[in-house]
Image (cartoon, rainbow, N blue to C red; front, side, top):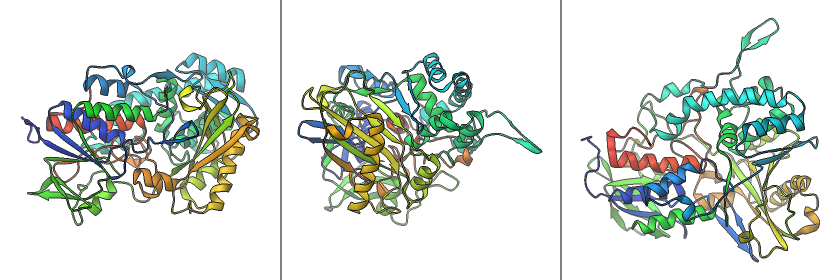
Length: 511
């Protein structure tokens, strides 16, 4: 038996009730352990929040689900019950309508490679589909090389091998210079796709995931590959319904939740994690502690304790980009031909990336417009709910408590969305803005930062810390740990943590 394998019923303390933490809690409870989740706020779900007003219902976090197989696996493994029995999944088709700065539009069908290539040829000219198709073949190779180590296995002890770029970029011939290969997604967009609208299409995927195309490795090509291969899905009633379903699964498996319980300290005994101490002084003993929050907070909970072993991946320093969201209540019925998911591209993606990733300036944003055809999110069929989202600098480099700034940026998003919804302003009843400050309050992440998915390449700069720490018995789950941010990745982190606790050194990854 492996040294750390849990062979008896253990007490597990989970810090935070985000989806990744709850996914770990449900799996651990099914394995026979006594699990208690301590959440500092009054509710579960973390970034999967909800805002309701006047019969309108809005997601305040992710609005779409990719790789639903992650959550199908969770529900089967924790109850032999399909995900579709607890939530209604609807494919988003077209997967996205892209509206470029010059007014050109293209609608990309859901999970249809041939359909995507045909649509690109029709909208952007003969040859666009062929060029994008060749790119997707290379993106698939990067996916095949990294899927297991970045989604389904604990972070390898020799994680340095993931520093190598898995994307097989073709060599670019240059006059009087040595050939070069694209090292960043921005270079892939410029050199392999020729820039322009195809390049903007690719760079938009990076921005949506909180990545700068100019620094993200070429391996970020897996992001459009995932969407166009496995599809995009919407949960009826809003994505908050997924968090509700995971929470209810936890309750059904006897996971206990304590809300309004801020963990002040991780208790250490005999050189391992032994429980948590709450802000009111209550101490709860545990055999294992799972941190589902930003792991940098552990340094306050364990002052003076080295948590990251020498030579291992450490949490990134400083705040990461955040998101600015505008919730719109509209009068009038949703048109039958309206797209659920539209991306309105910025006229200057480079300036946008500089503003979002270096601050403090602002630039015209790339705006995601979500307008679901869902009676559950509107008061009646004579109204419509829209959600606008842009990637922005976190609170700190930009002062998102400045009301004038918030109004100005709200207007920027609405102006961009009006290109996709021409009668938007005439139909607008009211709007509500959610800034990085709101995200920081909901998740506890510094500046309202949103974690990006883990990626290979770039010298391993885009990896997240392992699900284990240098303190035995202390584990990490959620978007700030391996395999990183995004609903699919977060769900996988819960599976990895449960496997590591239950099987210990024998665990080799999810099956």
